[in-house]
Image (cartoon, rainbow, N blue to C red; front, side, top):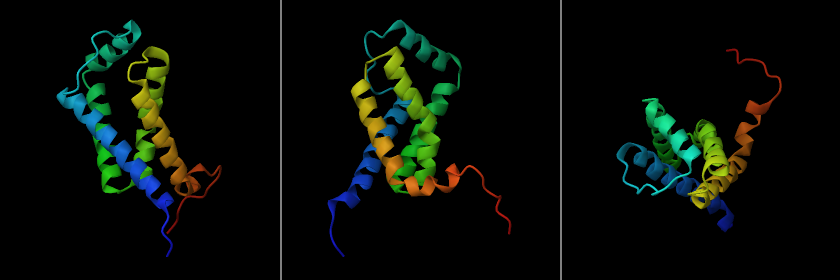
Length: 137
């Protein structure tokens, strides 16, 4: 068996994204990270809407913590990647259209996420088939 560093890239990416989502998800519940002193008006309105809904911020944070646990425990990683996809899209849109604050961390998270989707691409083949028959036992 040959030793290659490449086989550790998915583990490193999975662990890093898992840690990022764990910290950010827990911050949604515990608010231990400092908030920026000023924020663009549209970004503040968006975040205010999440808080005002009474559940959305907690739902997003809970999903982040759940996915982080899945990544860090190396369990159901392809499912975790699918579950967190809408959050990734919103992270990208938020930093692209509403606020550049935190964009470097967001960009790193998105790039690592895309790498993981690529690394697990074989798992998604059947799911992306245009036509399939339902499983029959």
